[in-house]
Length: 335
Image 1: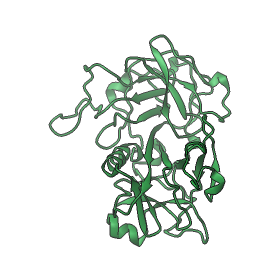
Image 2: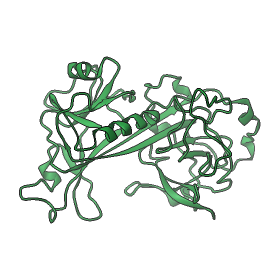
Image 3: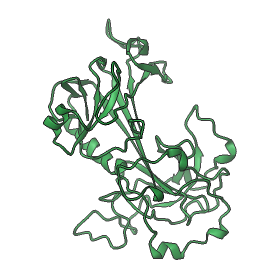
Image 4: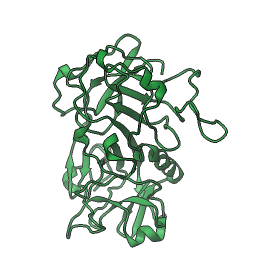
């Protein structure tokens, strides 16, 4: 993964291949499709009337990916190409954030940038060690046009440089000419997707994340119970990212978590044609869960959260997403 800066592309020093591998992995999370009809086997096991949690939003599949890149520099054409679409809102933005972790002032060389005040068009989110964590402004792009004099990063699926370097079907993350990535900064990119059955099957369709949320009262009634999302990313789930089906009727908690699971969950999956999840293999399995923690700074009523039962631990599954679902969930300790 790299950042296209004006007419140049900045990539991770000594990590070009690794960065591209990470970008390929994030494709599954960012291309999650909308829900279709549930399969008969799972539907027969549902008993919505017996569930204690009342659903308050649409039924959605949320995907989340956290990418860390370091020491961006260099000029390698095509390094920032994304082989997948990211849904763009009507306002021209995508559901991603880009932050720069700067060196602590005590560890930085002379004249190094150590404060977000030195990074235009950013704000300091702060780190626990006192170092600066600068969130860059996202510049909206509507019909391939950036606002005049706007500076920051943007989702590029329209520029001439993109077409020359990535081809007509690719996308990338770019920054405007006025943004310079500080030397030795660690770039963090968090992206999420929100899809609901009402949105249809278009992977690039935008859905208001506020429409997808968990019940207002947390419960751990059936944490650990088996579940399977009604739909999955093309090519199956990726083991390095997290997914939550919000509104899963088979779960009293209304949350089906897929975490640390790789491959297709489809019982009809052919191992000769695709990567298939082995339900008999040890390790993590999809299961009903509940939200046990929300991100710092998010105003969440404690009654909306749950305590993980024995054998489960609270782990961050959704790095980004709607306020009613983002955060940590109970996952198996041995998963």
